[in-house]
Every structure is written in structure tokens, then in C-alpha cells.
Length: 368
Image (tube, rainbow, N blue to C red; front, side):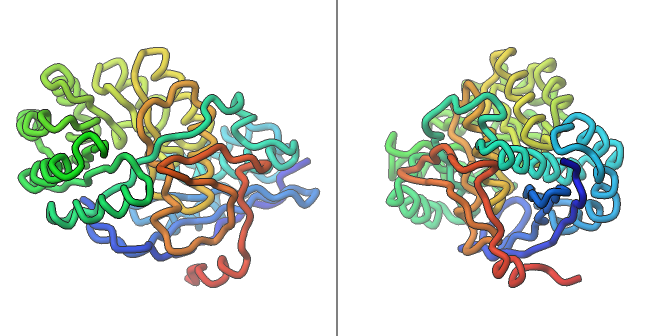
């Protein structure tokens, strides 16, 4: 069973509401759908998810012109050689790992469909019955953040993430308002999104958050400031989480060796695929580092990939962002993902458990 074709289709899907973050205001997502076909008619799906360096849609030409031709002719189950060819064709630019991740997803999706098994069973099977989810709050006034948190809490969610920018006073005021409104009834994570220039600046903000029982503080410093992140770990009681610092297993090893994180937020896209993300989780567990799962946020294919990863991880003890699809008003696929009470439950269909809605894909496809 040989890979006969790999193509990527750029598409644009509207969000349910505008999201304000450190990247600015977003009202839509632009990603790439990878369709991998075999010579016997089997198809696997992957998603190029990226919200900086352009967007996921911008990498579709790279897949169509470089990556796809590099893997045509390989046996579907020759995973190691397929991904070696992918990485050989993507030597420059870390953000190209998101294209490699889409191929990894598509290969595993096709393998699962052929075997009649969900992808998580190819990774060792489900290690949990459900995953606790986080929903992100748009950067806004404390009053607006509380109102948005109420909507999530009424829908059953138990944890929210406060997205932050350079206005540290507003970040602290928002966390204080959430704590006053919900108390222990709502867990709060804080994502500083590299908003602090120095470790001293970051520590000043984090110290102000300590009294509110924040679950974690995510990426307060630049990705390569591992010494600064290690300093923060030593001087605050709040767990320090990294995400932009980890693009693949090699970065994870460097973070661990530097003592730069209590928790690694693992992205399938940034890791280069589901299997490399699983390796990061294994490295973290061996070194007694916590893990969570991050989100771009993805649409249906990428969210399914994150779900299969999450359920295959033996120790996923931190609230995770396996809910990208919930931020969108529509999608180019249909899936069997089940969300309820602030949790996601194990997918059961073969492969990733997603199928293309050809009509929606045609409607949302970007014509260049």
C-alpha cells in the first residue's frame, strides 16, 4: 500500500467571536488541510495549524511542491522513512514543523483507518477516561473577562486561561476579579505570552499573582531565555509552564536540562506531529516534569489529533487546550469528538475519527 499523492488545501474558517491576544485581534483562522492518498484509495487527513509566521494556509504550497513529492511511493506503514523524508525536505524554518505535523497526522489517520483502530490505540491505547479542558479568555477589561468566564462556567467548563499582553496591571486585575467572582469554583491559568522582557519584570508580575491560587504561569519570557525561566522557577511558588520554548523533542530536552519549566505545554503542530509530541511527554515524565496540551487553536482535524495524543499519555494531570474546534463557528470536517461538562472524551472511530465535508471545504477554501 503505497502513498500515491499528498496535497494541501488552504482554508479559512470564522471564529465564534473575535479573540484578542498578544498576536492582536483574530476573527477567523487560516489553516491547511492535508489529504494523503494511497494507491488503493485510502485517505488520511492532517491539519497545518499555525497562527504566526503567516498562518497554516501559507505552508500549503510547501506541502504541494516539496513535501508531497518527497513521500510519494513510500509504503503507508514505513513511518520512520516517511517522516525522515519530510524532515529532509524541511531543513529551514522551525515553523515548517507544523507542515511535518500535518503529514504525521495524515499517515497515522490512514493507518488507523486501514486497521480499524483509533489513532490513540496505535500509541498504546487510552490511559484516561476524560481530559479536563481549559478555555481561553480574550484580552479585555476585568469586567468583560468575568462575563466571558461566566459563559464558559455555565457551559460546564471548570478552568479558564487569562491571555495577557504588556499591560501587567490589567492582567493582575483580571485574575483578581475572577478570583473574587468565582473563588475555588473556577481554576485560572495565566498565559503571559512572552510579555515580560526580563526575569525581574516577570517575577514582579508573578509575585502579584501568587495570592490568587493561579494554576500555572505560561511562557512569561522569550523562548530562548531558559536561564531566566529557571530563575523564575526558583523564586516563585507558582508553576512555570513553557510552550513557545519547545518546538520538538530536542527543545524539550534543553528545557529539562536547564531546569526551565515545571510544566511543558505540548503542541502537536509545534512538535512536528503526534509521535514526536508523545516523545516529549515521555521525556517530561521521566524527568518528573508536568505536561499539558496546547492549541493554536486548531479546527476539527488538529483538535482530534491533540485528543488522541492526550488520551495516549500516561500522565496528563494538568488542564489542557484540547478544544480548538469549539472556538470556531464552522469547520471543513465532521468528527465524533465528544465534549461534555468541561471535559473531552476518548474518540472511538478509526483513525483520527474525522471525515471531510466536501461542501464546506469548497465553501471555505482559499482561492489564491
